[in-house]
Each structure stands twice: as structure tokens, then as C-alpha cells.
Length: 282
Image 1 (tube, one colour):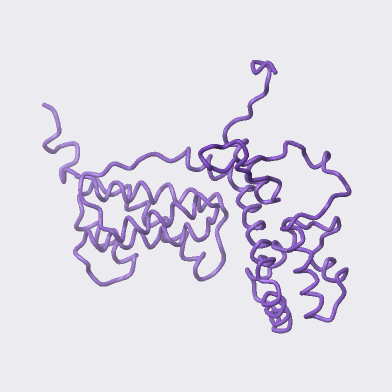
Image 2: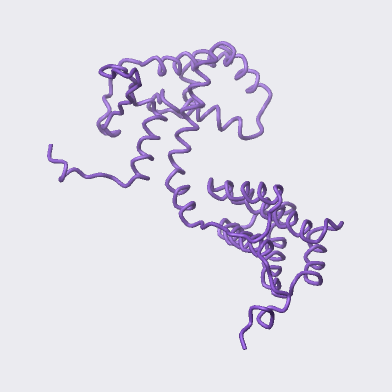
């Protein structure tokens, strides 16, 4: 094969493709031909259109079949009825059962369903574990390119003074929420990060975030004025997310970037005289 004419996908697309293959268990491990004893991972290159309509069940797929059988037995339903609930029109062995289980565990449900699921899982724990693992991997494969792009938009935040562990931890938590697309959670944690930072900078006074911002305007260098305005904007946008309704993802993203600016400036040395201070020329 002339490698000069082979199309090589971008790294992020290649990794996304690999994640889908892992999620669908479309791979094979082997030590054949490896004198060092290490594993070789082989993935199929066919797409969905190239998937054969008749095939022998793998061990993982057999686990899925057994799990559906266990659910049917525990609930008094047929396998076909369980499959209808899973919405697996093509008898999706690889991840549909796991997706069904995962979605039910992400929300409030009825007691009867929980009891059926518990009984079936006790009967076939390996099948349930495999199914959920595949569903989670499938979810990650869908968001993976966006996660990479969001990381690419970030830059390092150099500071001049020591940043407390609490502030670092909350900023990291907010950043990971942003990367994974959990924007409401990101906004709420951003508010907490600012509150921790302001309270530390002001000597740990009592009061809510609004009062801390007011104290900061009086006690911190006036050059902090713009970022304190950002801090108050984050506070105002986060309050409805906690008490009323969530802002749009676009608003949450904007507040995340403003939070990063606030925290960086709070831990950067400021001249109290601003442009008229020691750094001024003339």
C-alpha cells in the first residue's frame, strides 16, 4: 500500500472513532506475535453499513442477552417486551441495555422498576456491568471532540501570589464541568470559587457574596473594579440557576471565562495607585 495516498484522520476524530469501537466492543485483544508478552488491540475498520446482519454472539453480547432474560424473568415480561422498553429495534446487544440502565439511574423512578432491576442485576451482575460500561463509553465518544475543543480554548492563568487550595479546587471543578459540558454545574461552582477567593483576600469576614463584593470595592485596589463587576455579574447569573431556572449554556460559558479573569486578577499583584503608581513613567 502506498501510504502517501492513505487518508489519515485528525487525531481527535481517530480517537473518537476508537472510543465508539470500544463502546460497541468491536475490537480484539491478542498476544500473538508479541515476544514481550504485551497485548495487541485490533479494531475493525468496517462501518455500520458493513456490519453483517447475521453473526455469532460474542461473550459480551451473550451477557447482554442473559441480562435481558434476567430482567424479563424478574418482571414477568417477555424478552420482546423488555427489548421494546429498551427501544432496541435492531436487538442492540452492545450498549442499548447499558444505556437503558444508565438513563433510569440518572432520574427518579418507580419502586417496582427498581426492585426488578435489582433482582435481575443480582442474577447477572457481569452483564449489567458490561452494559453500563459500554453505555458510558458511548457517551464519552459523543462528547470527546467537544471536550478537546473546549480544552483548546483555555490558557494558563499565571498568578503572582499563593492561591489557596480551596480556590484552586473550586476552579478545577468548574473547569472540568465546563470541559464535560455541564454548564449549569459549572456556573454554580464558579460562584463558589469567587466567594472563596474574595473571602480569603479580605481576611475571612462573614457575609454572603454580595456583601463580600461590596467590601472588596472598599478594601482592594481600585484597579480591581472591572473584575469585581464581573464577580457581581457571575453572582447575579448563578442565583437563578440555584433558586429559579437555569441560564442558557451561552451565558454559563461566558460566566466561566469571567470567573477565570476574576480569580487571576485577585491573585495578581496590583498597584493601589494604578497607572499613577510605581510602574508609571515620567
